[in-house]
Image (cartoon, rainbow, N blue to C red; front, side, top):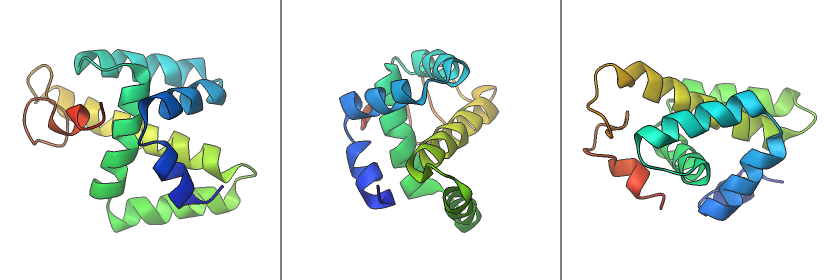
Length: 118
């Protein structure tokens, strides 16, 4: 699966939820569920938003890292999904101590970028 196709599929909450479930990583799922709850999001909505935020906010270094991870992986789509989710979780966790409840790391207001994923 090409990266563009993966990103297209992740725009939809149901597809994003299925992709997260297919990873079979209970620790990652729990982290997504916990952080998503801060923004009143289901895990699927959080993953869809994470992919969108990565696409629009990741630095050149983040993109280079993603490409390297995908190139070295036997399952590039899985590697890309995990990287985008972890990137988003890290940003939301780092900003969590500075942001009011319900406001994400994008800084666009109350759940701004997260609400766009619904």
